Image (cartoon, rainbow, N blue to C red):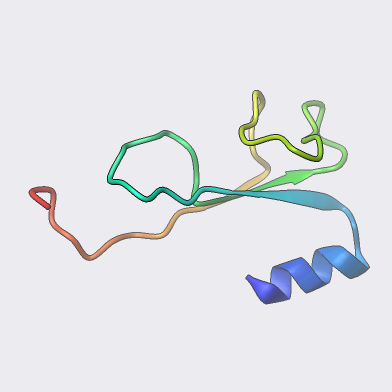
Length: 68
């Protein structure tokens, strides 16, 4: 994550949006989404979601079972 942030600091070609949930709520949003600046639905400074399509998505898989 730090490497991606460092890269985008030097090459500001995209913005990052992340998802951190304290509960086990299911939301259809990636753990980490990258939206390039050239994307027609670019992210604003304080956006918490994206109305368009992410250019890259990173999803972390949990080792927990569905019953947890």
